[in-house]
Length: 79
Image (tube, rainbow, N blue to C red; front, side, top):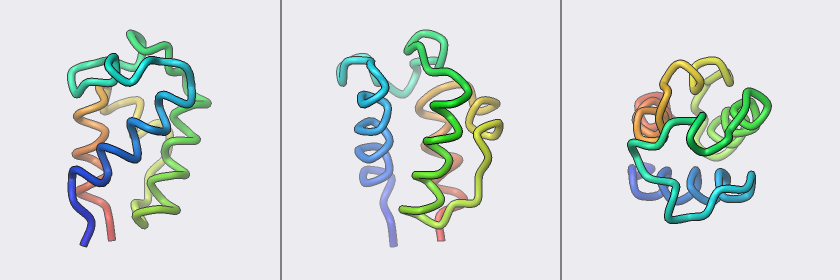
């Protein structure tokens, strides 16, 4: 089964590909602070689905609001 650490690393990697520095991608960081927009969140939701079987929409991640809450959401829905 997938671990929180694996999800955290994969999501952090994806977020840094959108522009933020790795050290900015902390659990309490909000999407706004990181400059992550709704298109980025759709892409993150696709990664969560492909890598972990987590059925999510970009809007679900947007509503999570922070990196940490998004990771918890993906973990809770991972297959």
